[in-house]
Image 1 (cartoon, rainbow, N blue to C red):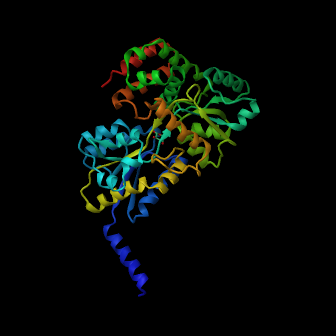
Image 2: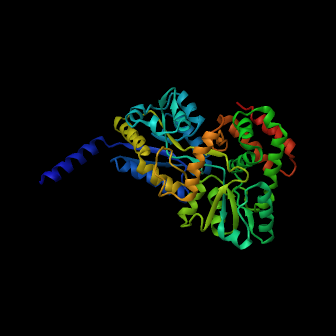
Image 3: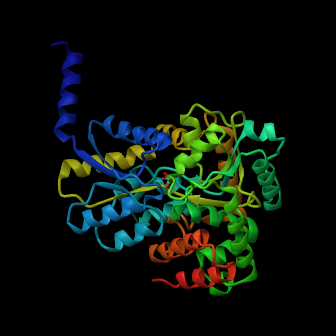
Length: 412
Ligand code: GAL
């Protein structure tokens, strides 16, 4: 055998001998999400390991988290799971997560990640999770052609939004695409709170869960504004998946959607171009703020050595610049890793990266409550239900809803 071939087959043999399998739990099943998940799978396979897909469909991940709990309780945790925000700490406290400090130290993650990101990935100073991206939640997505035909400009304030919505309704176009699932209701509501109350109010009410902010006139106004949106959604909204709501905007059946930038992944997967086919602007009144949602993978303790090696290789691969670029081009988000070149990214992503940095300085970089970033999961779940109940009720007033919201925030 030629020496080169011998060397190649030897290294292949060595790789196979240490090859492991990583089972990865996620909920990325829509068009853009699936492409991003594929990038993750490819980066693991490139290291010679195999990927065991554990996809649990359901936007926002509530179903995935339920399935995860039962798997961990039965002693059969996956190697990696999409776990975010304060929940990372909850899982770590249970003693089921593995430290990936060895990888983090070798690759200097502390220097590569913004503090707001790295702090969430650690439990008692040790890395137990690795971030793939930063999503911005407070976006308004617009079908450019529909707006042009209607002679409208992207609304910057809620007043502008409602007058544009009236004009669209008269033309027979659904102004706002929405999917009536509780996490989508809360996604919409948090954008309204940010626009109506501003960053400081959002932080007090929806992060610190301060009772007097939750029961203030500003909250009543935010609740009333949120409910005013409902007549601008269509009658088939209840239960609709978020990506089907995005598809309505892509096809021009609806004009706008308020959703995190995973929606951009859908536009891009459908071959649409920002600035030409669709527009991205901050949700009304929230241009100076940034509500963030960081996707990350927490690593579970494993017994098999090859699998645990593969798990560490996955963690290292996720932080590699090539992966952070490719993944986020498909996912609609921006890289979690600092110092990345943004030239292959579109203007929505560039705006997002700039606003992420400027809002961090201005104190208006805020964790998304609807996406598991802001409060413990018990309070988040109860708030989600209170907001959806109000959205779906013909009887509850903004005042009634405020009381329910304040009570939900006390859930432990
Ligand atoms: C979010 C998640 C995103 C996105 C979205 C819809 O919670 O962080 O990555 O996929 O749900 O499923």
